Image 1 (cartoon, rainbow, N blue to C red):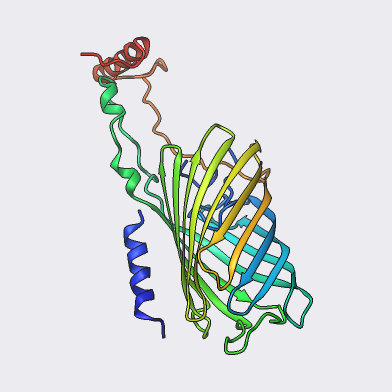
Image 2 (image 1 turned 180 degrees about the horizontal axis):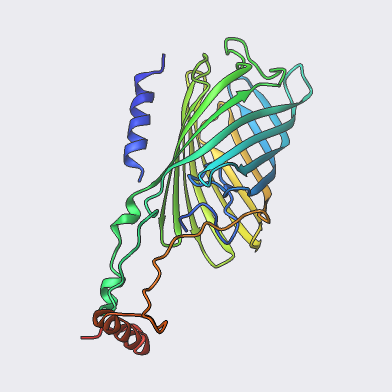
Length: 328
């Protein structure tokens, strides 16, 4: 059974952590962080996110060291619905030991197949009312941004490695185990907050409740910076990572990134850093069209507007002419 403290942690994070739309003009990648956004890439859109990394581990109690490199590939595809995304994650790692019988190893460290679905978008069917008489009213603080978009993820871990790193007293990873996540996302201007609550391998004795919280800030139209904390809370492994990174938008469908991260513990102590690229293929994407009300016309084909509408149009024109100052 899961420990009570893990359930408390789950409840706390879910209830306290507080560019919408599925498809965006520019690529929206999960890299260089480890969190997953609440939104999908968009129906018929294919996106690949590839990274390579170097790592160094040192375990003080077991007196061994591991150094090596690895690669991580995420394939994302928007299928059937605008809110649905199919997801494949593959991670390969090659490393060397200094004080083990095994000199080196390579393995497919992670294989996860899953799907993500956007349950709730606070900006869907919401239209901010424009007050053409007041600049202040149009720029006041919007409390709606504190309502997060919410998505869910369900997947399957498939263990294809030979468990060469298993230690006495610690069970090997199960061959097949489920993975579920709750995903939330807020946007505060040019700052995006993403949080993930992860129930991983909970049907086995390697069960864990993990979390990731990521803050991304747009610095310019092409540069963005990221800071992230990731926690693992299981019976056999508990730790926390602090990670930082940056991304550069090369063009609307291409992004490059770099990151570095360090954990809290020394059993083992882990330092890793890497670079990556994200690419999007969206030639088959058809924009979602919103139905708009047609203006009524008279017999001569001219638009019919009431006096109130004409007055608002005239006031809006005056508002634009004076540069957005309040008109009394």
